[in-house]
Image 1 (cartoon, rainbow, N blue to C red):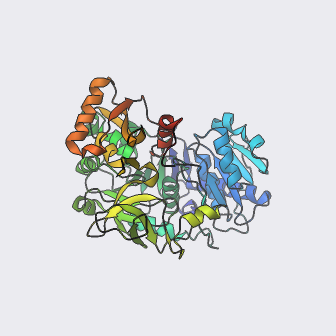
Image 2: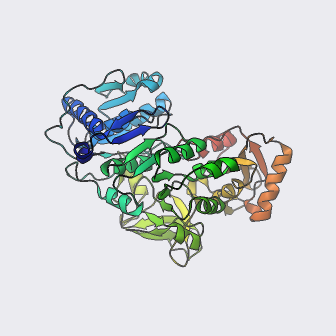
Image 3: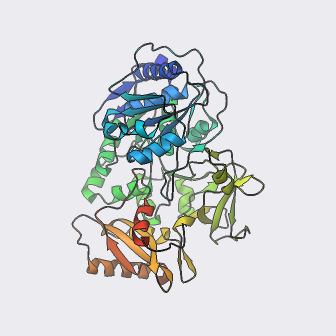
Length: 504
């Protein structure tokens, strides 16, 4: 977020453009606003390594507040703007925020937080209370950083804190150099951010873009047709997406896709979930070999990466490890042979901790403390490329057989009548669990027994029968977070109510 160089060199260049409103913040305006926020934090006597929290939707003020924290040595936590009051309050309290900044758009939820968060010293609502002068930098600038929370799709969200070096704010974290190199980011690019800024990947990418003098176009929320329109209008060069967005783009009418001018795109990065092979194949065919993929948790305990060319040679992979060694271990801690799924561990990159939760931190480490996991399941091929299978929490155990539902979900999403799909284990008195699919049909497709039979037959034609759903339920919309992550726990809890779930 440190963009002073460009505020001086190109003060009138657009730093941020909001997609819907067209609101534009120049680099000079961003620099002044970030400095005003920095003074607000210093006036509140916030010191290096203190914590603040931001509860806002995608808007320019959120980025300006991040800029203020990033030049005052603070840890800042961006809170999911879709949370209910009690959920948001949990994060405010857990991160020990001394100041919380919210937006007028979220006032209905934000006004309930002070009663739930007694230790917060100051509440600020942008658009209602904006820091005024001065606009100059504070005297004791220090690099701050994000301390974000896991999505909470499998349990209570966890604060993920990484060491913060005593740098000047003009010195980016090493992560930024890696993003620039691997993602093909360059000075003066035009970056399109289609995802919520409270999430780690968009937050880091926009921050890197500002440091490179990029113009960042921020979508308030993802819409497939609008995404294509924005690429053409602003001659977008770079973006970062999730597989659900790819699916939505591919399900647009053919005439809309053919009319879209995406020739300006240089690199599109994706992560967050395994991408169904047919989806990525179609996207590479449409956009060319500009699709880059990585796998990493918010914890930053490990990283894999692959280009389109590598992926086409190893279809379905999320890449090879960079900077840390991958170990695939079984339940007894033994290394699994190539092609055999196990828990993914990374050795050599464990410099994170779960904030105020030493027990959870210890759970993520081996006894030596040099290897860590976030509980994902996958396998390596003979060339060392990693393939994700699923989260351990989502594994279905049916009649003693382990079933990872991601494969079935990836298949269902390719069916022309399916907009979205979730696969989960539901109670079965004989087998313990059985496989069920919950499907969001395409518009104008009638849900019902005929579609259920068609989808089960489609699965049985393509994958082993034991992985196929025995039944299909239909929903108008599946509970996905705006980041694209499926909030599977909400679905799963509905089916397990009154039963003792074998996996927690």
